[in-house]
Length: 605
Image (cartoon, rainbow, N blue to C red; front, side, top):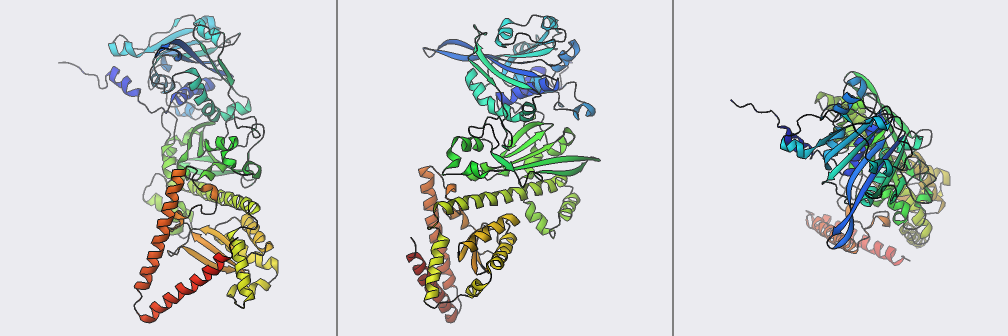
């Protein structure tokens, strides 16, 4: 009777090649995790190109990639374990809680996701004592390689000693080499380094910023390794833009582009989470673009704005190393999302709760939690976060411990979006001081007042300015603005003598907009939940319009169709009035509003 392996080795390894690494940069990060965990002060990513004829042209192609470090190195047993799938030296709960490593899959699984052979040299008494072992997929598939080869003394190839650019490889260290590369998206050293530089700088920004590790990126031709073609030092890439000496273009390469939100004293929020009988602390850090960063026209299209557009999302940081920049928290079509930053950091004890994948590229449960409308959930339970959590607990929802954290993040993102809108509105007003719709509408009201027409809100214009501003600020704050932003908007409106203030908010009841007289000002609030809102061309910020001509044309056509649908809806509203008096009243409203609109539109500049 024939015995069968539960999992045939060759098929299992082939399946592991499709283990979800996004690209070579993420796979390299697994190796760099090991280096940093081993106490390395220097880590080098080395890329060797080979020249040859391709389509009758001499071209360079990536032939091998290596990660070299000066960490603690490995002895014979540790080296063999490191090349085993699903094994490692940091699998115990005690070890897992101390650093980045945990799953024991990193070195072999990351490597074979990009190449068919991985060689490892490691030493603890000088590079001349280096032990070598390897994994070769061809040998596994043929059945010739069934166990990890026993490490043997073997000299480090000259291509890597010369290509490293180091005079001394150190008393201890490790070299991991990928060859027979067949799955990398990037076919040249330049492409690999260009696409990895910002990602590596973002993943390890804290380690680099503190000076705990230096990461070098270097490429060369395999027949001339001592002559580098590319040589770079990885700098921090901070999605919160609170660091200096980063990859952000000038003038924000040597100074922060964002500032702590809401203030330097209160931009880090600690949330206590109880999970599996233990208390854990999750830290959330918030940042908002400075006025300088957004000053002038088209800040988003300038170099620093384009850099910020590549760092959109919530940065999820585990044990000091970023797992991912999660876009699930953003409104992807809004270019203003680049101007805020959020970072959530936690320790490995919460891996299961956050849903950390074994390739350490994502936190699945946390990303799923981003889709929860926590504001609506809390509202359903009388505004109590504790009652909302209890409802989830009663349903045995695994996301219950994350609810308070997610609610805080979503609330702060909404607040930052509002302040970004205030910044944009302020700049728009400065550019078009005499052309704003509010100013033109105010002038139309003044003409009607001179003609003897009075509105209920006009009486409040005789109140003291500070009292009027307070009334308006209270309403703006009730609509969702922060206390500071509401005061600033109200003061600006009263100081400029405006009769109108346009705002946006989520409104109940199905109305497209609301009208609230406060302090002699008519506060007109558009309902962001109404389908008509999405049809407005630029809402409150023209920068939100698409730049592509075809996309803009589509937006215009959709807006025109939307206006027609709203007119059709009014026509049906009149048609459904059940009595002649009701129908006549609706027609009179339409006539009166039309005449009023005619006067306002005639007043446009």
